[in-house]
Amino acid sequence: MSSTWAERIVEALRISSHPLNDDALARRLDASQRQTINQVCRQLAARGKITRLTGPDGKIVNMLIAANSSAKGVSDPGTASSKNSSGDRLLTEDMVKEAVKSHLEGLGYSVTVAWGRAHGIDIEAHRADDHLYLEAKGEAASPPQQVNYFIGALGELVQRLRDPYARYGLALPDHPQYRGLVQRLPALARERLNLVIMLVDRHDGTTVTTLL
Image 1 (cartoon, helix red, strand yellow):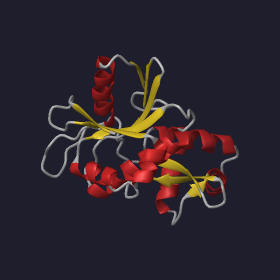
Image 2 (cartoon, helix red, strand yellow; image 1 turned 90 degrees about the vertical axis):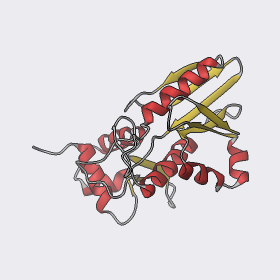
Image 3 (cartoon, one colour; image 1 turned 180 degrees about the horizontal axis):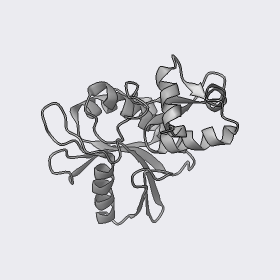
């Protein structure tokens, strides 16, 4: 069975020693249409499998988030059901989205969610003149992979910055590692981004704590 473009891109990024832009991927994969590579990379970024960041030459580069994943066995942080080494259930990205959606609707927001592999901002909430845009991530089975999720979410969020009057943030499981990563963010970065952090309780899967 022939591999898909998504599988080939993930494999190319996995074996590369550095992030690759769309042109480099198109050359490596012998793709006649660069636009095909661009579209699939955007889809992979929306699914949380890669992150797209501005490289040193000003071009957008693609970087694999779960660097130790194989092309045909990449775990999907959005919908995959998994457990940690202790056998506890992990909160998936969609579980986080559902909890935050219910929480925000309870506060009077109108909320739109990009479920699973859908494109666009993960959570978009509006209430009068208050506009909130959130990138969501679930838990990972390994600490390094969870760090990659966090870094990837920040990269995706920065690329969404459009409205100077809106608030932007992250929706995450209330995990000690995620809290530690948030606390290590420079205060100036959080201030400039007007960053909101929403943490979903890992035990009941519904309680949301907001860090401003």
